[in-house]
Image (tube, rainbow, N blue to C red; front, side, top):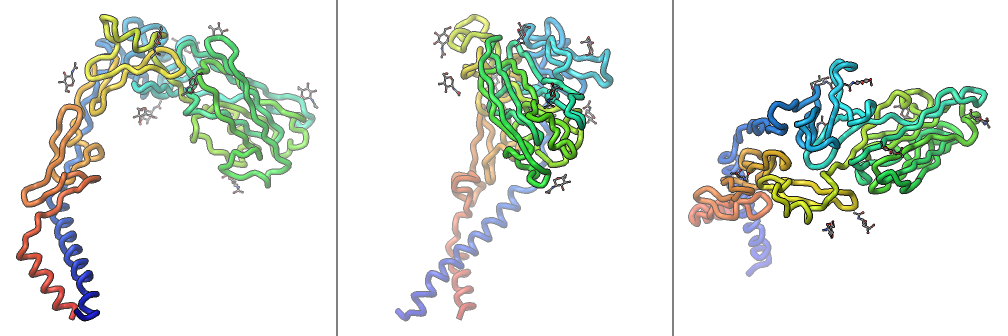
Amino acid sequence: MSKQKVLLQPIILLIVIKVLLAAATSAQTQLTSPPLPSPPPPGEVEVKPGCQDKCENVSIPYPFGTKKGCYLNEDFLITCNSTHYDPPKPFLPKSYSTEVTNISVDGKLYITLCPAVQCYDESGQLTDGFTSSVNLSSFFISNTDNVHVAVGCDTYSYIFGYKNEQYAYSGGCISYCAGIDYVVNGSCNGFGCCQTSFAQGINCFEVSAMSFKNHTDVYNFNPCSFSFVVQDGKFNFFSNMLGSDYLKKASLPVVLDWSVGSENCTNVVNKKNHPCKGNASCYDVENGSGYRCKCNDGFQGNPYLNGCHDIDECKVPELNTCKQKCINTEGSHTCSCYKGYHGDGRKNGEGCTRTPDRTSVIQIVVGKQAHMY
Ligand SMILES: *[C@@H]1O[C@H](CO)[C@@H](O)[C@H](O)[C@H]1NC(C)=O
Ligand SMILES: *[C@@H]1O[C@H](CO)[C@@H](O)[C@H](O)[C@H]1NC(C)=O
Ligand SMILES: *[C@@H]1O[C@H](CO)[C@@H](O)[C@H](O)[C@H]1NC(C)=O
Ligand SMILES: *[C@@H]1O[C@H](CO)[C@@H](O)[C@H](O)[C@H]1NC(C)=O
Ligand SMILES: *[C@@H]1O[C@H](CO)[C@@H](O)[C@H](O)[C@H]1NC(C)=O
Ligand SMILES: *[C@@H]1O[C@H](CO)[C@@H](O)[C@H](O)[C@H]1NC(C)=O
Ligand SMILES: *[C@@H]1O[C@H](CO)[C@@H](O)[C@H](O)[C@H]1NC(C)=O
Ligand SMILES: *[C@@H]1O[C@H](CO)[C@@H](O)[C@H](O)[C@H]1NC(C)=O
Ligand SMILES: *[C@@H]1O[C@H](CO)[C@@H](O)[C@H](O)[C@H]1NC(C)=O
C-alpha cells in the first residue's frame, strides 16, 4: 500500500460519515418540523369553588385563600385589600404592610419589604430613621433564596433573627468608603455595599442600619445608610444609590418558604384524610416545620386540592426528549424513530439515524473518491 492510499482511507471514511450525517439531519428537520406551538394547558382549578383565585395579578392557589372556607387554616389567609388600593393588593395575614407578589404551590411565597434607613444632615443629626422587620407566624424566610445587604459609606448593619418567638441569631456587615471612586458598580464587597448570608429556620427578623460617625465624613456624597434582606440576585448595587434617596422608597423582593402544619409526613400520611391528593407525594420540610405536597414527576396541578394530572410532554417541546416520534405515557413519555431510521429516538441518546442503504453509500464513496483525485 502506498503512503498516499493509507492516508486517503480515513479521509474517505470521514467524507462518507459527513455525507450520511448531512442526509440524516436534513431528513430529520423535514420530518419533525414544524412543531405547532402548543397551547398552554387549560387553566388549573387551583381554588375551592366560589373562592377568589386572584387578587389583581397575583394568583392565590389553595391552601391560600382570601376568606374563611377558602383557605386551609388561618395561616394561609391572604387579605386582598381593595378598600385602600386601586388596583387591589394582596397582603400577608395580620400584616397590612407585607405585600405578596407571587405564590407558588411548590412552597415559595414572594413578598416585598422596605429597607431600614438612617439619614443624617450636614451636622450629623438624624433626619430619617426606620428599622425593617417582619414577623411571620408560620412561614420562614428562605435562607437559600435571600441575602442580607447594607449600602452606605459609613455604615454597619445588624440583623436579629427569631425562631418561634425565641431569639435565634444575630449577624451583620460593615461597609465603608472614603470616596465614591472606590466603589465598583455591581460589586457588594465592603466598599459602599456589603452582604452576608441569612440564617436558616428564621420566621421573624429585625434589621437596622447604623453609622459610625453619622455620615459626617462622607455627607457630601453619602448621607444615608440602608440595610435590608433581599432575594439573592435581585439587588444590583450602583454607586449612584449612595447619593440618592432611591433606596428610601424601594420595595425589595424577599422569598419565604411555606409548608403545612407542624407534623411531619410520617404523622400525616397515616391519617384518614391524606393531605396530598392524587399523583402527589408528601415531603418533610428540613429544619422547618410541617410538610409539603408535591406532584410526582411528570404530573402537574395543585397537590393540595384536586391532585395532579399527567403532563403531555409530547405537546411541550421543552419537556420531551424525542428526535422524531413522541408517545405520551402516564407520568412520562417514550421516543421512537420513523420507518427507515434506527436508534433510541432521544435527543440526548442515540437519536435517529437513517438505516444505511448500501448501494447509495457506495455511490457516494465512489463519487467523492473520483473528485479527490
Ligand atoms: C397586571 O398585569 C398587567 C398585564 O401584565 C399589567 O399591565 C398591570 O400593570 C399589572 N397590574 C399590577 C397591579 O401589577
Ligand atoms: C387595607 O389597608 C389599610 C391601610 O393599610 C388598612 O387600614 C385596612 O384595614 C386594610 N383593609 C383590609 C380589608 O384589609
Ligand atoms: C409566579 O410564580 C410562578 C410559579 O413559580 C411563575 O411561573 C410565575 O412566572 C411567577 N409570576 C410572576 C409575576 O413572577
Ligand atoms: C449621631 O447621631 C445621634 C442621633 O442623632 C446622636 O445622638 C449622636 O450624638 C451623633 N453622634 C455624632 C458623633 O455626631
Ligand atoms: C411576633 O408576633 C408574635 C405574635 O403576634 C409576638 O408574640 C412576638 O413577640 C413577635 N415577635 C417579635 C420578635 O416581635
Ligand atoms: C456606576 O453606575 C452609575 C449608574 O449607572 C453610573 O452613573 C456610574 O458612572 C458608574 N460608575 C462606574 C465606575 O462605572
Ligand atoms: C416525625 O415526627 C415524629 C414525632 O412527632 C418523630 O418521632 C419522627 O422521627 C419524625 N419523622 C421524621 C422523618 O422526621
Ligand atoms: C393521576 O393522573 C392520571 C392521569 O392524568 C389520572 O387519570 C388519575 O385520575 C390521577 N389520579 C388521581 C387519584 O387523581
Ligand atoms: C438541619 O438541622 C440539622 C441539625 O441542626 C443540621 O445538622 C442540618 O445540616 C440542617 N440541614 C440543613 C439543610 O441545613
